[in-house]
Image (cartoon, rainbow, N blue to C red; front, side, top):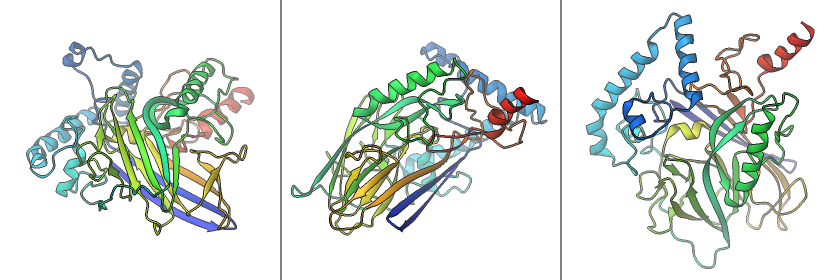
Length: 392
């Protein structure tokens, strides 16, 4: 699985646009959420969700129709053998931050330089040694949770069971929106609470901000069911408040178990480069590709952040107005380009059926799985299909 991130910053005429390119190209999914369960899973009381059975049946059907029957099993066996060979070396070179099993902690294998294990290397990312915030620094405090959530991709009702970062104060809005969206899937004329153009929807990638010279404090709670989660701000000198260690997946406490919390802080230097940092969880790959991403932006010293909808101060949002008494005001937009899941993952339509890997009308690959800020509008299986149904 590879993940490439491209940040492009353009500032002119009072407008700054930040663009993230987050591409997830995975051959197979190895997390417990997608691995086939055996007798031991049922002994432990783990129930297989119905959509997982649909997913596996769809994958098997497509492989049979493509003359590749059994390919997935062969790939799984090959990767299992590879992980077995690397297990001893992994333990020698990196101690996982949390006990999640060989597959869950496979990020540590990247430290060995294995070319056949694609993805971001924890060891290759330079870690800046941060420090505790001085008492004189202005404080930006955010209380953030990682949660499970059903993400509806468009007003047609396509959706997938995913994850997201959310401010604790907005969890109620997210749950109300999630409930309304689920109800709307029973009525083809109801778009739910999915607005045209995203606007101020509660279910969107989280974007936080602080200024040069600020003390950023984050109280992070992992409310994801039965999975570890992290809050890593790429390219920052964020530390774990209690220990002063870098807030990376390799530091004890950097990965938070389900139901637990951790405090992080970053004293942002006054000369810190303005710009965007990707927020992600390095505890596992599937949550990242299924919505557990966000952005943190360093703004000019003295900035305030205003909602474009009512002009009032706001803490989170993909579009804001940056006001500053000592510099030019500007508008800011944050665009996340990302894929939904890996190559074997299928979003669902409003009827709970898996969306095909290839659009039968346009032959587009993985419709509904190429998304922007949790939104995807497949043209063929929705728009053209309705036109064909109505007008032939």
